[in-house]
Image (cartoon, rainbow, N blue to C red; front, side):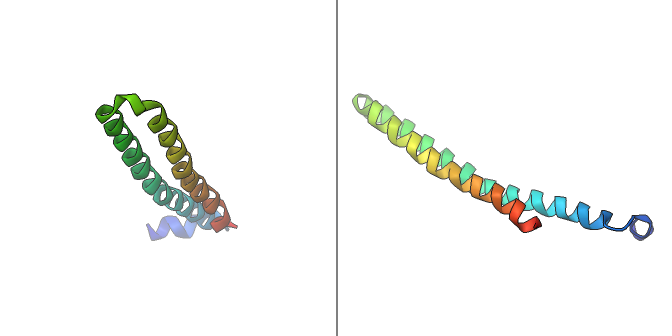
Length: 85
């Protein structure tokens, strides 16, 4: 392993570690919204099953919740670029 690192050109190691760091940042930022969207949709389906007559209101609220939760993933995506400079 050390021999391989010694043979890399100038800046190659930094570029590789930057890519790995970017992947870790975005991967970590995508976990929360993924769980959040699962909870929002699951609870909306449960609400629609309990009261089918209010399905339209629940569906609208569900889509708003999904949009706000997905914004967190976009913030993480932007943050992964900010971290790398």
